[in-house]
Amino acid sequence: MAKSGQKRTIDGAAGQDSLAALITLGTAGVMTFLAMPVIAAALVNVLGASERDVGLFSTIQLITLSCGCLLSTFLPRGQFRRFGIAALAVMIVCDLLCLTRPGWTVFLVLRGIGGAAGGIAVSQATAAMARTRNAERSFGLFLALQTVLSIVCVYAMPPIIGAFGFAAAYSVLLAFDILALALVATRLRPISAAEEHHAMPGNDLAGWLRSGGMLVSILCFFIGVGALWTFLALLGQGIGLGETQVALVLSISKLVAFAASFLPGIVGGRFGRIAPIVAAAAVLVAAVQVYAVAGSFAVFVLATAMFSFGWYVIYPFQLGALGQVDHDGRPMLAAAALTGAGLGLGPALTVLGPGGPAGIYLIATLAFLGAGLFAIAALLRPSSPAPILAQGS
Image (cartoon, rainbow, N blue to C red; front, side, top):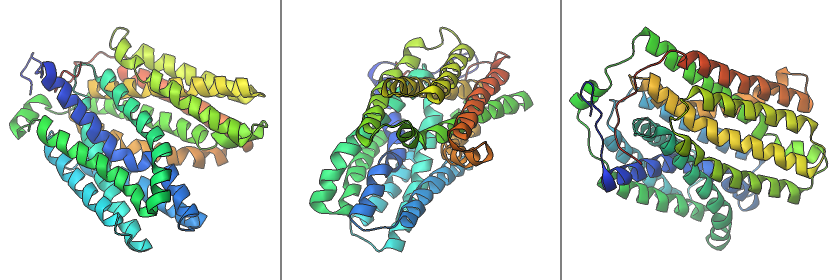
C-alpha cells in the first residue's frame, strides 16, 4: 500500500472507480436505515403492526448494524474487497428471502442478519475511504449519496409497496445491493496482508488516546443529533407548525444537507481539521439556541438549515481527523457503530434534563460542545497522515 515516506495512489479513472465502489458499498450497508421511516410506516399501514412491533423492528436494525461495525474490528484488516463482497452477498440473500413474505419472527431474524452484514459493509467502506487522498471529499460524497437515496426511498418505495405489497420494499434494497456487489467485485483491488501490515503498523499509546478522543467526539456529535432530530417534528408542532409545514422543513433540511455535503471536499485540508470541526460545532450549538427562541415558521426553518449544515460539514471532517490519527485501523472500523449508539443515547439522556424542550436543548448543546472540545484535544498535536489507498479526486 505505502512504503516509508511514500503514498500509494490509484490515479485517473481507476481512483474514481475505486471511490465509487467504496461509497456504494457503504451506502448499501445503511440503506435499510435510510429506508426505515418508509418501511416502518408500511408495517403499520399495510401489515397492521403495532407501535411495539415497529419499535422492535427499528431496535433490531440499529443494534445489529452497530454489532456488525464492532465485528469488523476483529476481522483481518485491509480486506475491504473480500469482506465487502461477503457482506453484500449476505444482504442480498436476506433481501431475497424477505421477498418471499416470511413470518414475523423469521422476518426479524433476516433483518437482524442483514443489519449485521450492513454494519460490516459500512465499516469496511468507511475505513477504506479514510485512506483516500481527500478523505473529507470522500465522506462528503458518501453523505450526499445517502441524502439522495433517502429522498428516493420516500418517493419510490410507497408506490412499489402499494402496487406489490409490503415485501416488495426490499426489491429496492436488493437492486442497490446487486449494484454495489458488481462495483466492489470489479473496481476494488485485493490488498495483501503484508501490504496492510506495512501501511498500518499500529498505534502507540498517544495514537490510541487521540483515536479515542476522536471517537468520543463522534459519539458526542451523534448524541446531540439524536436528541434534536428525534424530537424535531414535535418541537415544530410545539410552536404551532402544522404537519405540512413540518414536512416542508424536513424537505428543506435535506436540500441544505445535500449542498453542505460537498463543502468538506472543497475546503479539504486548507485550514487543517480543528478549525472546520470547531466552526461546524459552533454552528450546531447556535442552531440549538435558535430553536430555543423560535416562534415562527421562518425562524424554525433557519434553525433547521443551520442544524443540517453543521451536521453534514462536521461529520466528514471528524472521520477524516480519525483517519489522520489512527494508524491501526480498528478505531475507524468501530466509528460507524457510534452512529447507532449516539442516536439511541441522545433521546434517552434528555430525560435527565429539566424536561420538555429545555431538556432537549440542554443535552444537544452539551453534546455539540463536547464534539468540538474532544476533537481539539485529539488533534492539537500534529500527526503524520495515514497512507493513501486511492486518489478519489
